[in-house]
Length: 328
Image (cartoon, rainbow, N blue to C red):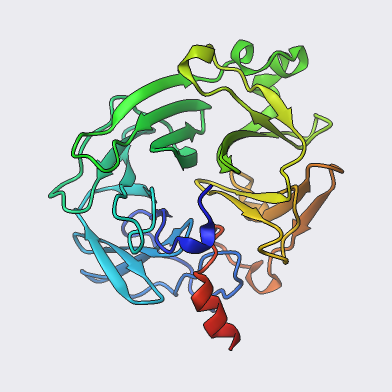
């Protein structure tokens, strides 16, 4: 399990060049990204893409930069256009072996993966298989696990600490007869499952299913057998107790935090950053208790309810020294 507080660089999703963000006051709530008002449209402008774990991803004319706001450190990345999402396997300020994984849009709706190690002159790739927009990404035991909006799963060995290119280990689509031993889940898989997420918690790689309202449970957590010997893939044993941990999930976000270390959060809950909802609902967050099934909505700020545009959101936790400085 990778503690979020130790990661200051992370993934980001960039808007297309030329799209203006709505102007307005900065957002300061700690549970989401902070984006500045849109600057004037001129060559060389900076666009700040939001992270899953703070830094900020900046695109500056032909430049792509990772920016750590606490120290001001900038790490330039080779240009890759058009970049949609960027994910980091570790903290560049603390890890000696880390990799950036980017998705690049390919017409009409496919995305392709590219990989970059510090010191490389260019991105390597593209990956062997295309994907739809990624809804869930997790780094675990040297691999990256990707799940897209069509429930396709791609697993790559990143070959961290070597000069070898990443290797595709497995690629498959979740279909009803692979999903579960439970007939109701198989029967209504396509109609009932809204999203699928993967997250590392307490050394295990868990699968979280988000359902539409027709099912008794809004979310269910499972412990799959990810090893090739256990294929075809099944979601495995259902998990109802996270051992005092809480899962933070969203579009690309996947983090597990211990409630004892972070008293403001509730254990055995899933904090879910809602996405793919109608525009009038905005995109916001909720807390689902795995034990009781209760759902608490995190209210959308009144000051932003009348905005016409949509802001990108993400869970993040700043470094603890930064928090202590702010509280001092």
